[in-house]
Length: 66
Image 1 (cartoon, rainbow, N blue to C red):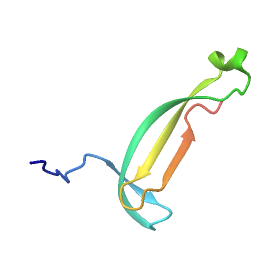
Image 2: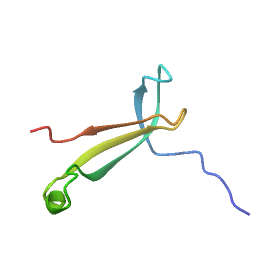
Image 3: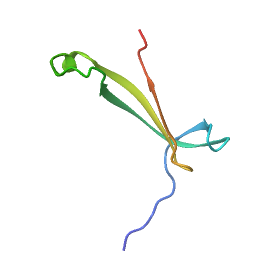
């Protein structure tokens, strides 16, 4: 029998959608920004992705805005 462990080790952040401080799952994703296939390998950038565990709203922010 499967059990559910609701003690998620997320990060507490403010959620604009909920209007509250809620638990968020935070990860880093590498995204390709170029639409041209020949330049795609040189246009990968890290993004911080945060998903509210209460309402499911997902936000992302480019980490190195140079």
